[in-house]
Image (cartoon, rainbow, N blue to C red; front, side, top):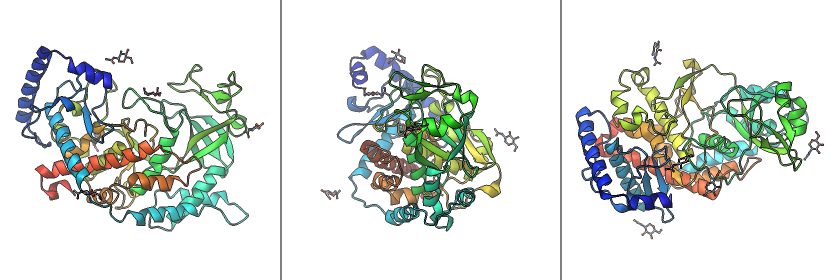
Length: 477
Ligand SMILES: *[C@@H]1O[C@H](CO)[C@@H](O)[C@H](O)[C@H]1NC(C)=O
Ligand SMILES: *[C@@H]1O[C@H](CO)[C@@H](O)[C@H](O)[C@H]1NC(C)=O
Ligand SMILES: *[C@@H]1O[C@H](CO)[C@@H](O)[C@H](O)[C@H]1NC(C)=O
Ligand SMILES: *[C@@H]1O[C@H](CO)[C@@H](O)[C@H](O)[C@H]1NC(C)=O
Ligand SMILES: *[C@@H]1O[C@H](CO)[C@@H](O)[C@H](O)[C@H]1NC(C)=O
């Protein structure tokens, strides 16, 4: 990053002028198109200071805030000025963020939530001698259940059992493009095992959606999802397995063929998938490997494309990246905006993904059957967040463009807004307390935990910027 900044400093004046002219033209065009988007701030983009320039050319494939040591945010963008009013939105968010940071507001009644989850998770030592697998799995099948339900009190036991249940079958999963093992646990429950590719402290560089799945991120995302009252991620836990005894022994032939021992006698495998290759195996330490175990629950889901998905091409931008009024112009006639509730769901998911740093939500899994949807208490009622593996890759970077549904539509569900306020300044600490119950804890580094609090404040700042333009009734629904 440092060298990118330095390069900007020596950018010649001519290039800067041309770029500024294009920017002014596009700015005018955007004003003509109009639409419901966050307004230009009066002085941007002309008052860009040297200290917070937009970086125009690099491999950055996400517009992002980078947190510097002194706590300030710098804006980085690859948008090459196609969207000058986007810059002013970011600038406004940044200013609001600085203001919020200076306020001495204490968090709300978050402890009630945290304590309730702690209580449920601490009921993890199963008392009776006889373990009835069916019992655990039939309770789990009812997930997502509300936090104030009796079922929720069984969460600790379900996790406890899932961590020990014998693996009876292991096969290569065809889901997605990355290596995953589909396992059948005693009692017939199916799960996905995502093995650990990285240590918990890894820093993923490059694109916002880069790197392989982070098993610890997948697990932490599940706990965070509960803390914030989304209840929209499948039950997920950390599990350490003896790869030889628990997986290889029960593996189908296809999967078995991809196992080998490396020079240090660690057991490795690479599976069969789009990105799987023998030169890029995942390896245990000796026989043991950590991973995220995700319980697959029998739900009817349908997959729909995220309107704010990325192009995954460095040089091609999606319409939401270049059109600040994407929410009103492009989505006007789509099925999504016909249902305000669905749009609020998408915003809620965007906020969650922004908090965990997941820039890879190209599709949503939606409940096919309305009757299956969780009750009104969930922040995202129709979307089930199955894949959270691209979370917590880089604690210094906040991919602000994940929040585009929020700053382009300027709508948020009231319950979510209240929840976020409740956890102001204490989200990292809360997640740490809850994830301590996981076998693989600590799941997240201190940097990731404090990034959560920073990002939560950025979300609140973004809502504030919306409130600067629209009435509270229009923004908080
Ligand atoms: C972009 O990435 C490619 C490969 O990842 C690298 O070769 C190239 O130097 C990078 N360009 C810039 C401007 O950093
Ligand atoms: C916030 O609290 C800190 C210490 O608790 C104090 O130093 C600071 O002046 C306060 N800021 C405001 C704006 O009240
Ligand atoms: C990312 O960059 C940092 C700093 O240059 C480096 O320490 C780290 O190993 C890199 N991460 C990966 C996964 O290559
Ligand atoms: C893993 O299981 C194998 C048997 O398949 C056993 O020989 C080995 O000692 C076990 N390793 C550990 C670390 O428990
Ligand atoms: C919108 O809804 C109609 C009817 O329900 C359906 O046929 C169509 O495929 C939907 N369009 C999109 C983009 O989902």
